[in-house]
Image 1 (cartoon, each protein chain N blue to C red):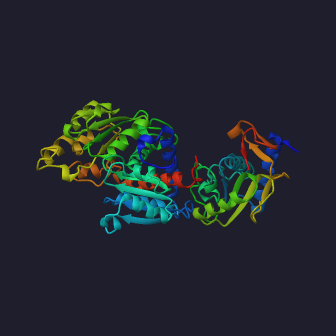
Image 2 (cartoon, chains in turn blue, yellow):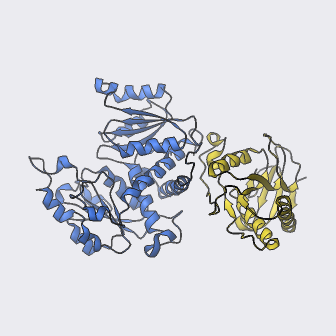
Image 3 (cartoon, helix red, strand yellow):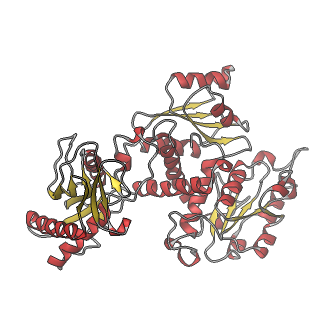
Length: 329
Length: 187
């Protein structure tokens, strides 16, 4: 593994290796001294062309916990706003000795372009590109599901004795909301399927991508139908991107109230989930739109925990890409 | 001299002796914690703890035994393909003010133990750290020594020492060979 660009590049073994490594990383984060010397002398650049709080901070924390030097680069206030190209930015990073570049870009495929261009020689980690992929988000989601739903810690709903080394076979996961514009959904569908879980997409017809019939998923149009038809082990509420909500010619559904009525997760719908099911959200949440406070703050919600798991998963990704000899594997 | 250096009875006797030496040195088993270095230090630590418990019934072998993975503290990470991480589990009481006995199978350059000392330092502040190894094959590259040694085996640098343990390899043996080992870990 030289880069981490897309979850569809990951084999089942790759994915389990990342999750197992993240488990060990998470264990070190419960100690008094959480810093590890592992990536001392390596430089990680956070290259963010698009706003992000949690992903950038999460990558920054992960790199620092492993003792790497971190350089944050956001497009605003940089030479990019003066018209510098991705290529020239990459050459600059190469000259600064970046061992890894974490890139968030508005354009789908930007991370791949950077990785395959030969402009720089470090590892590239995709932190979200357009509506394409956001692999570390899917990995932290899978990690959270495995921790809660597979293994001894998971309690009565558990399918196996230990989570370590296992995939997500036997689980049914619901992804609810705007699949069309969601890189989180795309990354999750590929990864969860690779790990053996069944994915159910719950989405208004207007927010389902063209060509969905080739995806290895079930599609239903309404949260009530999904709750009736499937025993969901986890339900992931996708963020409704406000700019796509309503008004004008480019609305994807008639009104926020209607969306909430058909696709929002409230207390009543939460109680219709199986006893062991967990509630997830990649953040940032629109409380009252796709999820109510009752569901978001309930004991079954793992939304806050997803954030801390994100640091462990990103530590694992950085470790696996950067710690070994160059060109290794 | 190559071939099987220690058989199962030799290993068993060496571990029994080390267990007694640990108790003697520390005047009993109070505050004693055994940390095995994965992979094969771990079963050795459990065996030593079981023997200590036979002598000192108040010693809870399972509660005082742990695993210390040193992978992220190695100084040669960048010289090898990425290694998978092992598990670190410490006794629930922690290691502050305990006497930690590190347990490993083969003592060679001393670099593993250097990494282990760094790892211990991040986990807490033990009163003392001691080192128990099944085999000392020499060729130290750092000023580190063992407190308890099962057997000193003079080796050439090119030779390989393989430790096989029932828990991981199905049998107990220490084998010295010229070339590639048939199995087990080399150090």
